[in-house]
Image 1: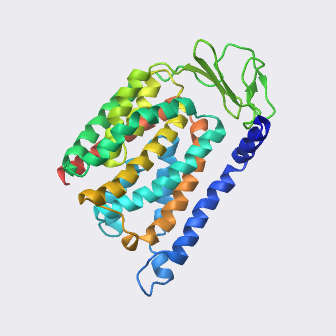
Image 2: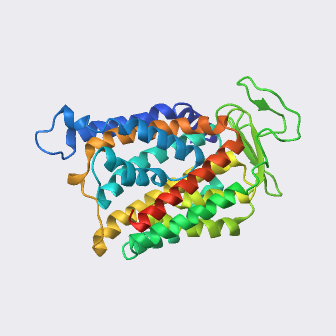
Image 3: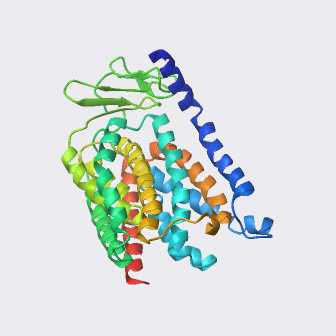
Length: 361
């Protein structure tokens, strides 16, 4: 296939990705209604029992995907602390199942949406994922021998430190459109310049170019441009290795700590958020596989389709997919300072919830 044909296929996929992404949960729901093992004699009351989870998971998925962190960072505390107030307590294996199924759809949806928007540095993302793999696997295997109280407390400390670092981080660098080159108005409301890249395989005046000195110039589909370098690999490796351990242990951590390292190495905030989606999505899938198959091998938890609360996931999956599609637009519309302060507060709240979990409260 020629490069021109590949460019056409890529552009067509990005243009209609929202349609393709929404087909996936529809197929999932159809398979659940027709093939999922459910209690005998269930009726419409069973399937509508947890309808109220849809707005909750839609809000949560939009929040976590807007700032590029793991869905479980909000879903797990919610299912542990809030869900029992309105329903009943859930055991750990059920928490894992609901979290993994929902997060898998939400992360995939949002990652594709950020790629469509032109806010993902795929070269940087793949490098980070590759370096994180042994730590994610190691953390997932350790989860079968380390008590819950230990890794909940450790992750709470890590997120509290990340919150502090974020509040003190300078996010004023490389705002979109901050290039010194002359710009002209684009037909879609963005800005374009003859000196900026314009890839015909992307939507709008979008593209990316890496100069000989390593400077990356990226243009999103609205025509906003970002200039940065991919330097700082050692600093990012340190954060992503620690975050990878926690990702394997608790299902989240690499997104929360990783975003700090990218911002600290002068990656523009919106590019950092978009790129972090790929890292979180791929490492979450890897951690999930180790938890599923590794748990069964060593006598730990394993997933059972027969005990899956299907009347919950029929609402959480569509909610996370929709939230993942909304997130790039929310991220692009918000001011950088708003994103920074919101994520900092969010980290502090999550760390408090984890400390309460560690104390058994």
